[in-house]
Image (tube, rainbow, N blue to C red; front, side, top):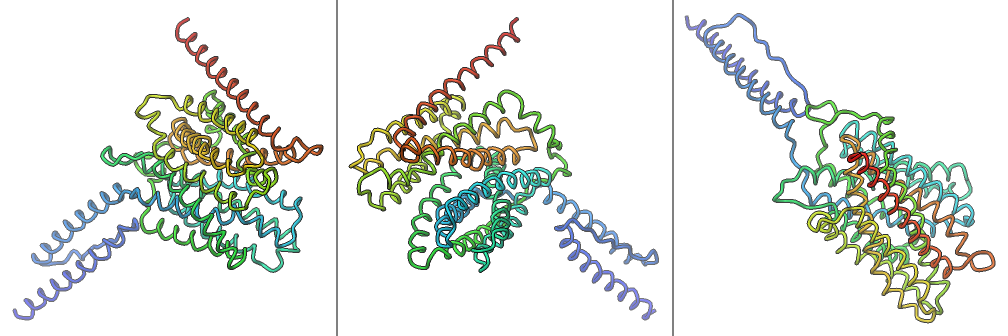
Length: 483
């Protein structure tokens, strides 16, 4: 009798230990989507049956809790969006502003520099579309940003190889990988911002501009810091600065950013094929928006890429500090525009097209002001630079919002990749080539004064065409509605 009773106790203790181990393991496995099977033998006593029922109830409760936690992931805190914008644009400015200085130290010709500066943005355009398709299909902003950031750092360190200065094929491969792997830093982060902002509660309502203004802070402040570091340690330090800042961003992404639901989860939007997505872009409104972005990007390339050359070349005795001060002023005045420009369409009732039209008109004014500035007073340039807040921050904020409204569900990342690549890569490359040839001193070119006048005239002419296009489309729509 005693042996039988002790056998029951030992069996009960075994079931208790196994059950405890099962619950522990199942709680860990549920986090990874796995399950464990616990099937005790059919032979048992009444005490065994009681324990089995207890563990079955615990298993069902554990499964329900795991399913609820899986369906309702922790929300991404908004401060992480700001930090990501700050770190990534701080990292990017290290290469954007100083990579040509590194090329110069390696002894590259202007022709080779121009080729590299053309190939990298073109590959970034391709890479941005490729990685955005991955994000739209998987919903994994976190995984895509982490993997491409790590591979991008490896590619960027390829510029430090000893053979890079005299091995053209290797240089081209490194440049193409650099463009392809670092492409998601802009469009994917913009898409992540829009995704997270769309899920926030009304009590915590913020807009895209509240996040993007931190990119201006990072870009402007790191431009000054990187310049000082280059003076102290040489141009090679830009690659290490880039790696450190990207590494910090990876840490933030891994710890605090959560992936969106993937396409195979319940409630996710239906998949839209790449062909279907391209067909939607051929409709009037998306196509007209993209054409405007391309043309405007080509027109503003004269200012974005050649303003520093204009200051140094055309003004008499212009100190180098003006070049850095001009960039700082531009970034400072981006911040309030990013912060408050959305009030025009969310609270004041202005359409996004109207905001875009008037902001782009300011660009024409900016060009005319550069053309008439007295060339013996270079400091007057700093009084024109505040207009950059409208000509870039307002235009970009309105364009991102407009594109997100036009995007089909499940194609938001692709749309952001398209507008980022079209503006920052394709339009910038084409505009740089055109204005680079046109802005040369006569007789080889028109000179900067004539180029700024021509740029202003082109901008006004295009805005008239753009407005007429919208007016004709609106009239056609009304005629179809009221025959």
